[in-house]
Length: 91
Image 1: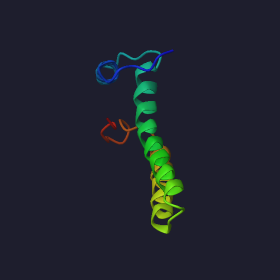
Image 2: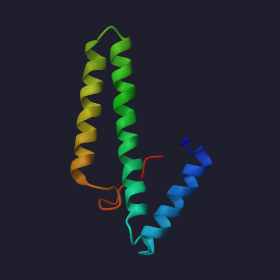
Image 3: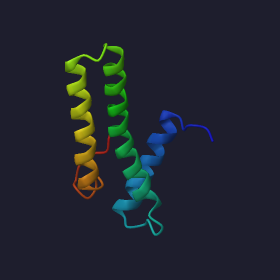
Image 4: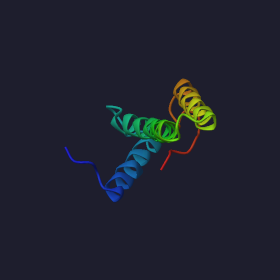
């Protein structure tokens, strides 16, 4: 399966938000897409922080950045979906 283009992903996320806003998500596909996109954004931040840490020679500053990224993901995960907390989706 190929990765969606940026335009395809934006269209899918817009449609998913529209479905949720209008209560037309009987199988929770829109909710799942929005939640996974939100979580993926946080995980990508963790990945980038880990990459910087590993390529910096394990610098203390980069380690702290990685720890903060992991903690931010854990906080986001414990709060639930962005729509439940009225947070914007990560783009």
